[in-house]
Length: 148
Image 1 (spheres, rainbow, N blue to C red):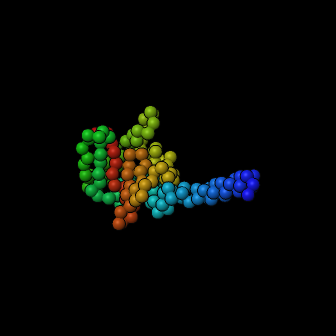
Image 2: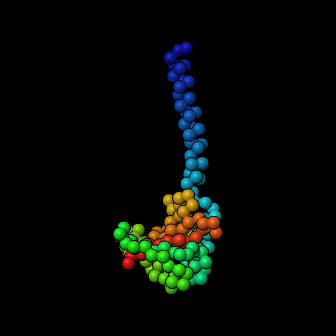
Image 3: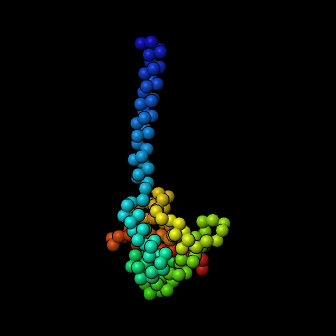
C-alpha cells in the first residue's frame, strides 16, 4: 500500500473518530443538567419564597432544618418548623456572598428563574447559601448558611 493511501485512511479515521466524539457531547451535557423534577420544585418554591409565603416555604422544607454559620468553625443548629417560619425573613435577607457587592438571597432567588447545571449534584442542588435535597418526600429545602 502506498504511503499516500495510508495517510488518507488515517486522516479519514481521525475525522470519523472526531465526529463520533462530537455526537456524544450533547449526551454528556444532559447528564450534568438539573433533573426536571428539581426544576419544577424550584419554580414552585421560588414563587413561594419571593412572596414570603412562610407556610408554603415551610411545607417545601424538611425538619429539623439545619442552619450553619458562614465560618468553618461555626456551630450548626437544628430548628423546628415554628422557629423556621419566624426565621424565613432573616434567611431571605442574608447575603449569599457571591459578589463583592452586598446583596440578598431574595434577590438571588429572583434572578434564578431556572437552575443551572452548576447548581446541581446527584440528589442535591444549591442556590447561593441554600441547600436542597431529594428526599423520600421529594425535593426539600434542608439547610442554609447565614452569618451568626
